[in-house]
Image (cartoon, rainbow, N blue to C red; front, side, top):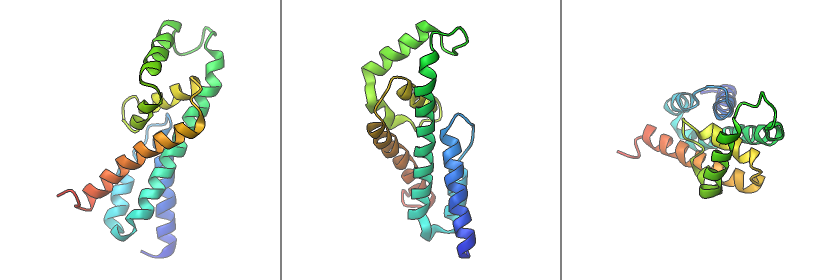
Length: 149
């Protein structure tokens, strides 16, 4: 693969991973697997691009949570007060460690929004979300390259 295509592939993977972490439905795993099949020797930089993009996309969700929380007393707020209190109790019980599971396809994105709404500090948020998302992509890289066989 020529250098220009390689750069575009990494940028495309970063963008796909970024979008996949936001509330926009998108699949970055297929992009990563396709690039790994085409260029398996670049697995480290592909892992880095996917992990950084996905983690930064989650930071967008965190910011949205920080911003939208101030409107929770409005009638149009998408979460009812009773449900919001239930989420607060759940997050108080499991806390920031639950962010290691922000990579889950169901509930992961919502978890990152909740972390912002409940004012989780940014540094622990980024570290825990980044660890979880990188671990998920690392398993996908290992499976694609046959290291788990």
